[in-house]
Length: 90
Image 1: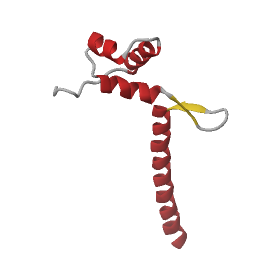
Image 2: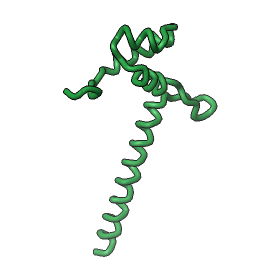
Image 3: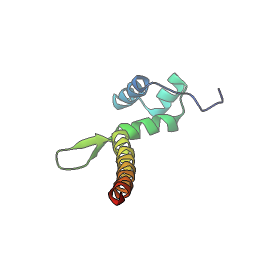
Image 4: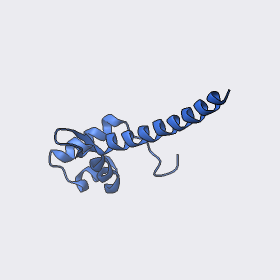
């Protein structure tokens, strides 16, 4: 496998983020687990909560997943509109 294309489980990523939140520095985690600081920083950023509304909080990863899902639903909606127009002509 080419360098830089390693896949890590969500459980492993969450463990690293929890260790960082418990007080370990990026440098300590990087040297201990053989990860780049930017990789760890990316995982930390994705796990940080985002306030959407007064009482609703999601993580960056959840927000990105919602945006992707919304785009897919909009595309499907457009397809259905076009199909409905075709069937209405018949």
